[in-house]
Length: 486
Image (tube, rainbow, N blue to C red; front, top):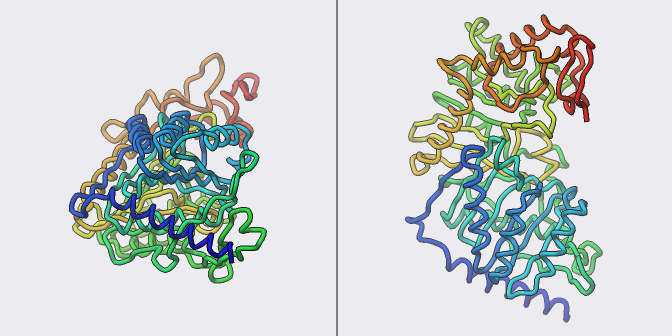
């Protein structure tokens, strides 16, 4: 009985606090949605997010996949000292790192009007969003890292309305929080309270803006209050709908938009591993829709391997097979920076967005943390938010401008910079480089030509490329050996 009374008290307390932060919301007519992009605006975008967190009055809720930027630590600490309650859900692998645990211990140990609490997600925590005082949300493709700030192509969407989308994100966070394991950092630390959530109103459909999340592929089952799971803070468990073979909430929403496209589809992403989306893009091209893609270096393959997971090569091959396309340039450009992409040398195109029928009154933008992969859909937490119609035309234009920037990166008169190409084919002390510090946008055919030019200089070079070689700096054409390997 005492436990039941305690749970009711906690729920009422949570609801009272919820009303407190809801009072900070702006009228619907004043709601603003805007975007910023790394690396061009990376520092400013992170500063805007950190300032919102640091100046929170009541509450901060954040999901974290990767955490290496010290600005995030300082923002969380400032929020706690400012009197806000900070709740963070961590990626499981991140939570195992000693450096992360040291940060968590420091933040949870702060004595102030506010307090910090951390949980570990039950599966990969790949979402990257923050909710501040229940009235401001930033949803992003970017992790809390210097690379995301200064080198990678990322996007940040800032929203202070409408109310229902803020509520949907609150519900999303509650599902992640209630299913996660509590991080206990000191003697006497207790399991954190559960958060109220409404499984039936997790998603608001039929509006101009809609949240699609991989968590929606699950049913939420309450764990008994007396269970070992609940004692660890895992108040609910996620049970896959359809026995683990479906549904595909995010993928199917994207495919529906592609199938409804009338004039154009522009996509920019880091990983593209879903055959069904590639097939939808090919079919859209077949009916005359202008499909263009900007992808990360890691997506390039000279030919499609049916046993592989990369689907950009699948789209390229099948687009070429369409009537009249055999001799045309494939509408795919790669943010090219390496023959063997390696984390230490990355200049990622880390976007995950689609823009359908740009400029039209019924245009729709999808953006978030969700890569086009089975992993994103069913093995981790990810989201996409759609913004449809003229109300979001400014936001859609901002993403279209970012797409065009990547499409034309280091190009003039629609030709790649001669300097960027010659960098890869110029011998320096008998060596050719593996990586560059200046990415360039290359078409599929341009990369194949570049690789053929390199083979003419050093026939064995590219054959030696593999995951390990990505940590090397170059190839000595005389010694026929990689060098600078770490």
